[in-house]
Image 1 (cartoon, rainbow, N blue to C red):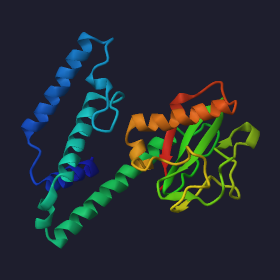
Image 2: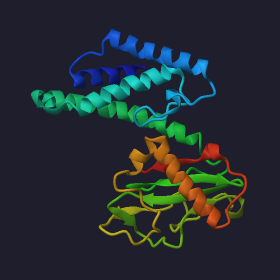
Image 3: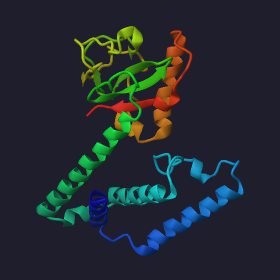
Length: 250
């Protein structure tokens, strides 16, 4: 809670004005009205079933939704500050950068915990490549991971005929990999050309891995592409969709 409060304080400083109580009450009233509409027509798709900004809020409580909406709104205001930041001196900028970095450390700890909830039950969590990520699905108690690189990066080993790595009983519950043991499945190195991987092994130029996982629709798109590719290779059956995810490297 202390870290969250610090984050709000930083956001307010950056925005140049406090988030007033009337503003909060307006957001709360908005949530109440949307809840009422949802109760009146539970079978219809309401605004609550669509992403707000770039996040999907369908699985959030109303309190969590309010928190995310406040933070999202503040972040959007920060992006539009323009010349306001130029009025701050070097020490103020350094202090704000330090505070935001500390909040990021806290958020990344929560992020790490969230990914452990989608870890394959019998396999170790694989290491996502820096400057890229892994698309992961689970079929018939076998975990499949497809390495992907961001724009401007390519695999250091040829992977055109090696779309994914896998882990299950048939691999003694260790990951197949081009490296010697461990959970490192691929590496993405700086490159002006993309020749080592298949055509779907690269994130779109305007949607690197970190942006992809911040938008549930974009993440689902990459997951669905991989599932279809697995089907073409004869991998079908019991699909544990609750374990589907995209994970980015540091």
